[in-house]
Amino acid sequence: NFRDLCLQTFKLDASHFITAPGFAFECMLKHTEVKLERLKCYNMQLMLEEGIRGGICQSVKIYVKANIPNIENVDFNENKPNTWIAYLDYINLYGKSMLSALLYQNFEWFENLTLDVTKIDDNSDYGYILEVDTDYSKSVHKIHNEFPFLPYPPNSKVIKLLTT
Image 1 (cartoon, rainbow, N blue to C red):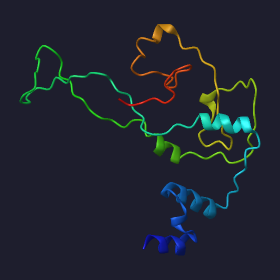
Image 2: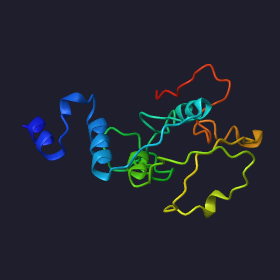
Image 3: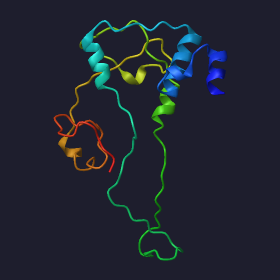
Image 4: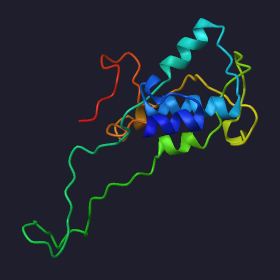
């Protein structure tokens, strides 16, 4: 039985956790003996919470029509190039984040820090959570209309993006 196995292996009762990831996180803390530092600054806590994203991640084109030869009941147009529709998981945000180190101590604010993010080593002992101001040129608004570069629109009436 799963609960008995968890008790024997990890000395933790899986029934005391709401989710399997919560249980796995506690197992990791116990196994690694890492001590997480509490954030002492309330504004830092708020900034981190505002940056949390979750759920499905996708880009959707409103209408797409494939042009596939040799399929019955499909309006194939031989004057147009052959096209297909495919689902591709190129992003893999969850899997990528599972390979990254977690921040757990020495949290500090930096004001007006000049940092070239392309030069930060993926395996660095230091990590950064950045809040940035950007200019989103009006010249690209139309071409980015369906796939926005910045997915959280400021001053939007819709706080969370929805997949439709």
